[in-house]
Amino acid sequence: MRPSSAKASGGAGAGTPRVLDSSCWLEYLADTERADLFAEPIEQVQTLIVPVITIYEVVKKLHRELGEEVAAAALALMQRGRVVPLDLSLAMDAALLALPMADSLIYATARRHGAELWTQDAHFEQLPGVRWFGKSKS
Image 1 (cartoon, rainbow, N blue to C red):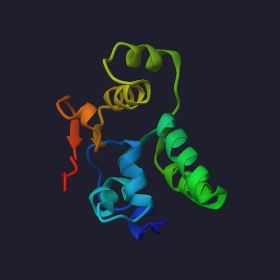
Image 2: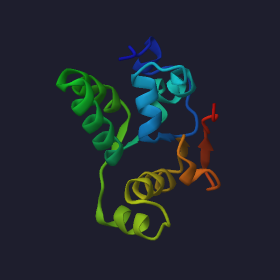
Image 3: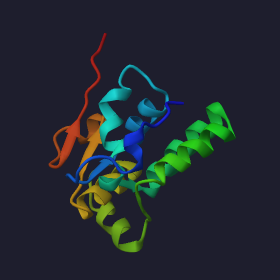
């Protein structure tokens, strides 16, 4: 798992709040060739918004594939941002979106907090407030 840098303790300057979907977190945590794309928003915890559904998806996958210790480390890192729980109002906002359930909850969380959503998921590609990182087909 990728170690977080010194920036994760509070880092430089305020900016636009950001939400990262699960795939971005997984790239970063696995330190893949795309990890650096997502390092800045993850490490600038003062502007990081973390939907609880994203924690669920990331921790579940890591626990299943890499074990409890890796999942616990990921949880600790994700909790450095502002964790947003699911409530009835957010669920109702998400229910009105034409996206799969988890994607709807993530996008509704970003919209509610005026955050830019960073994603690799094509479901989001044309939506406002989204920064899409398409994967090349090779």
